[in-house]
Image (cartoon, rainbow, N blue to C red):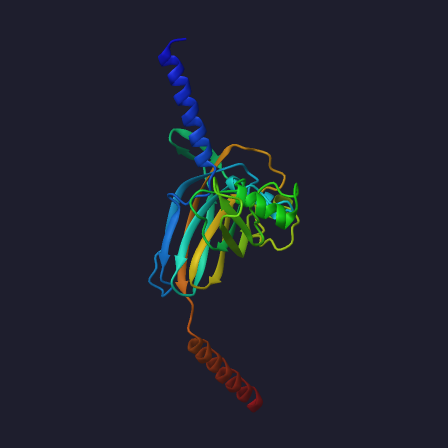
Length: 262
């Protein structure tokens, strides 16, 4: 084997290791929905042709030993004021970089307040120290908690380095318990059709969304495709609710008077 062949092998191995390491980090590249005002002027934002590894990544985060966040795909957005946030995940067949991916069969997602620091990784020293202390050594397989709060540290940093904290807000899953399992607190849409949509009233702040497969019995580690759409509309002012209530009260009084006359 000549020098150039050996060099090529070394370079290829280095690149493979680099890609494998960096691709395993939690990141939002190409998946930032942006900032929404919440005042009614925001337009829906579509982020198309996403992929996720496996058909079970979100569902695995609903059990006691947590899940691998890298089996999900992270998105982010910011709210400047309280708004009604609607998220839609649509599984679909896509071709990305010449590689075909089948439609994500049963999508699920969780919304958290908080963002991941660059380089965050489930198996970092800080993540390991935190998870061991919180759940016990050997009682966790990843950091991702689909139904509760969790934290993750930066890869390569010391075990006592700062963590990124995710405060649980809400979730939604496609299908029924036969698809996503029997964990308490799952908000299902009741129809297993590769599509899930749900709305939530959220206050100002920075949010992360983790999307993945919601098939609790899934075993595939193939790549699956989906689109994600986020929209935000304004919440009616309290005065509007007051006017609405007054209007209903007037109608009730009028109705009672009319019926008493009869």
